[in-house]
Each structure stands twice: as structure tokens, then as C-alpha cells.
Image 1 (tube, rainbow, N blue to C red):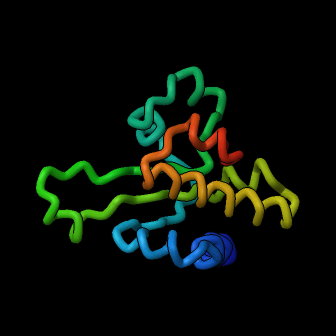
Image 2: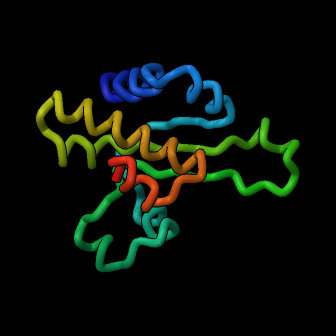
Image 3: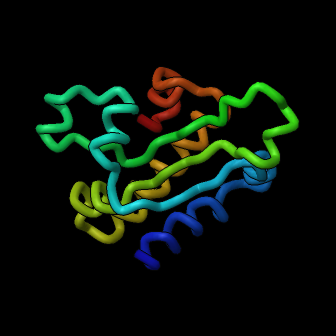
Length: 123
């Protein structure tokens, strides 16, 4: 897991400073894979779950009422290790796809939707 986390960290650190400066209130975590409960809450259908469909990453916004809470309750990005490793067994491709997933999920933090991601080649 530590090598995977290092790749995620490198992807974030490799972003331009103008982007990184807006990530102070974003936690970027690595998990092995999403749980079934997580997938259900994320809107996956039972058929998708049974078929083994899993996201590579997921953006979880903090939906607090009081803006003062933002310091204590950041947005969260989760990057999933197992789906990446299964889909991209080539080491160079794996690094590329992890970086692409990190950027994609950060795009959601900035308010981009899936159409925006597609327009920028981050789908």
C-alpha cells in the first residue's frame, strides 16, 4: 500500500502550485476498495455491484451548514487501490491512471461535473 500512497502523493505534489494552494481543505485518502455499503450510498445499482463495478476514486464534499465548520470538516477524496491495480497492471500505465484519477477527483472539488471532465480528457 505504501508504494501506491507514494504515487498518489507524488501526483498531488506534481500539480501546479496554483492548484495545490486550493487543496488545504481537502483530505486525500487511499483505501483498498470501496465497501458494498459505500457503493450503495454512492448510487451504484445492485446489478453494478454484483458485476464488480468499482470506481477508481470518489469525491466526498463536506456539506456543512456553517462555513466556519470547513476548517474541521474538509472535503475528502478517496483513491481506491485494488481497482487501479486490477485495471492497469502495467506499472507505467498504473502511475498515469492514478494521476489521472487524482486530477479527476480534484476537478470535482472545483465544481466540475462529468461533462467538464470529459471536455478536459479526464473522464
